[in-house]
Image 1 (cartoon, rainbow, N blue to C red):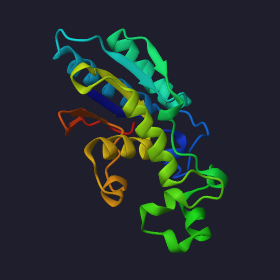
Image 2 (cartoon, rainbow, N blue to C red):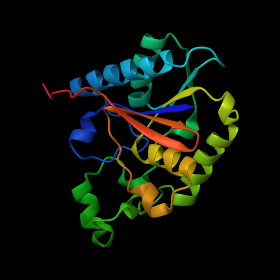
Image 3 (tube, helix red, strand yellow):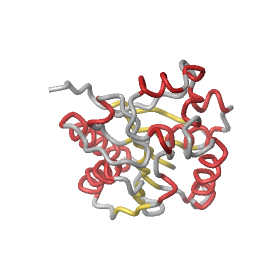
Image 4 (tube, helix red, strand yellow):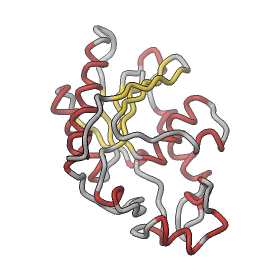
Length: 199
């Protein structure tokens, strides 16, 4: 079983600014989202009595580590870091707003292919290779009990590769910051947190 979380809201998420490998702090709402997802993940873990021990693995980027720390606080699990869970590298576009990118590449507006259009950024094939390698290194599914804390695009790849989705379907998936996905038996289930306000 895999429980998959995206990090909580960041300042750059609010500004619609592309983060990639750059750092941006969680907002107050993002901190509450992290705690809510941590509580939900802890509840899901508690339902799975017995069996192999759980692991908590996070992207080393600050926003994911901060979210994973909330999970560690609730579950008591030590946090492991893995570079393969990092967000896609957006190259020269990191720090730009979505609107600025649309001005640079109007041909990509309205598609998810803009993820791979940045000079110096990662390609679809490169992200698929590193995320696929990570999944391949996990134990067989009947022995797999792991909580992953990652990012928007990388989370799409984790779910998409697990489920064998097409490129288009993979990239069109939702990337909520108030939900936990469970990947089990070839199935993906979404568990939403209680609604949080923006205050």
